Length: 204
Image (cartoon, rainbow, N blue to C red; front, side, top):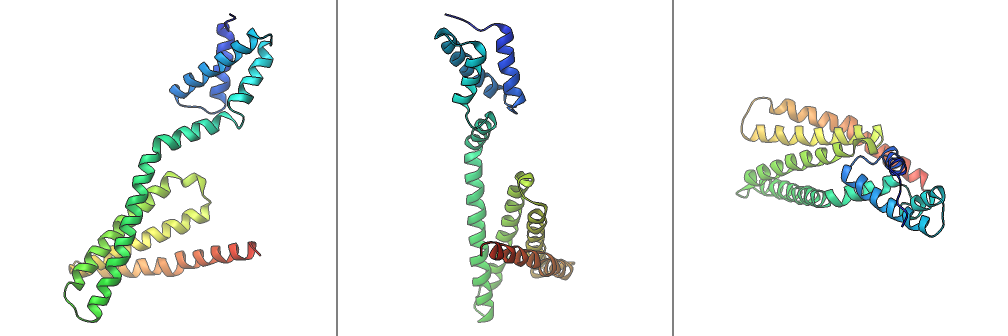
């Protein structure tokens, strides 16, 4: 059975590295697959160059980077799932508690302040979770999207923190609330509706 030379093995490894595979384990795993495929084809009568091209076309037809992306997704799937649970769970809790707390405050029922306090705390956690999740994929989005998202997170945090400060009678509450509302009104909302408008025009 024909075995590849050290030079041929090194050429395959350099191709894997050049295609953007950074994980050492993935490099070794792909190298083993390619070498086995190429050796098998050489034993059937192919030349190294023909078997080399056939190996890359058969094992990674869409490029090696796709394998690394799939591996990254599988390795981070549990983390992403837990992050989504936190975001949606806290987002629901914030919406429910704040709306219910406002209703209780309006009709002067007890526990209105407690509900609002819990809602604003949940909103702060949601804004932090969303911002952390967005930073991880910062390069995949446009600058306008990142600015709009950042403005939304900062607005939610400032309004929530300012409301908590106001309920606890800490100084600086009004400044935080006003700053958050200004950013919400003059940055986030205009950019959001402009984006929605452009999408609506583009789909006609």
